Length: 251
Ligand SMILES: Nc1ncnc2c1ncn2[C@@H]1O[C@H](COP(=O)(O)OP(=O)(O)OP(=O)(O)O)[C@@H](O)[C@H]1O
Ligand SMILES: [Mg+2]
Image (cartoon, rainbow, N blue to C red):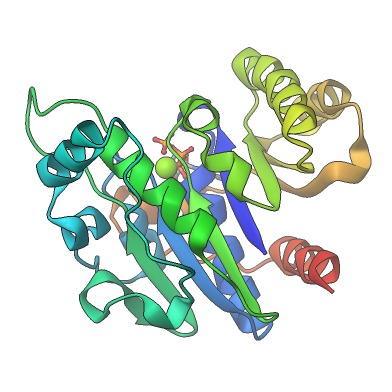
């Protein structure tokens, strides 16, 4: 199963990716996390892992990828046939406790251009990736919905939106529901950093409480660990149940 984790900036996407991946791995799944956010640098720290080489580098780097895209009038295929997780070259993933981490590529310099090289390689990679029954790929997306425009969500089986207590999340929940319907992909939700009032407002906005995978309060220990770049630890059955539901969907 391939899952994209999306939502507005700062809603808690990377936090949920890290917590969920750990619980899925604990449940015996082989988890591949794809850091598909070109602008943030801390996901590996949430996981207590090292970063691998950026995957765009495998294809010669961002400039070379863009060049190949342009000379082929944007038809260049970076992959020959299907890939399995075991085909990812050694330098381009790191691994710990049943979790593998890949990084699409980051913006490093001013004026270096847009991130469509990384987006194109990742779309093709996810499209060509064949998973076995006990494997789950989780994409940590950049904020907002540009990834829908790039077509990355066409390639996943489930869209997981993280909603924080904000009017933007209320609006985005409706937009992502609509986009999911168009793509015929199930959209599930995590309500994050919530209290009683925000849970009510967000649940109404989602319109289908069956699709709420988990509800988290604002947990100071998560904020503190993220501030210091430490591995995220949250002892709660909430994420176990979320992981169980995902395993159930896969069965
Ligand atoms: N349940 C929570 N309780 C407390 N703090 C949280 C919770 N979830 C996320 N945070 C904090 O909110 C901030 C944003 O979280 P995170 O980086 O996971 O969001 P994001 O959606 O991935 O952000 P971006 O859009 O920048 O990628 C971080 O400081 C994180 O520690
Ligand atoms: Mg993030």
